Image (cartoon, rainbow, N blue to C red; front, side, top):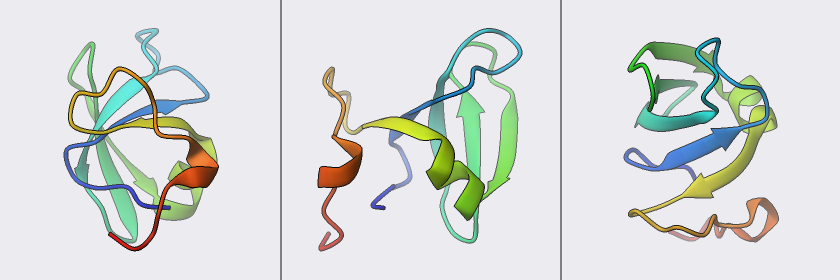
Length: 74
């Protein structure tokens, strides 16, 4: 899955504050993400993070990139 630093992701389960959108801060074996509502930062293993992603928003797009249609060529 093509996730980049600066993307916003929508997760299946919400953060305890009730928000389910996160900003991606770091990508690698672990993802470092920040809740867009309360600014808490969370580290997740890549496998768990990719499994939990519902939608990816890039460059302020209002419409999400479809999970299955994200290209790996970038």
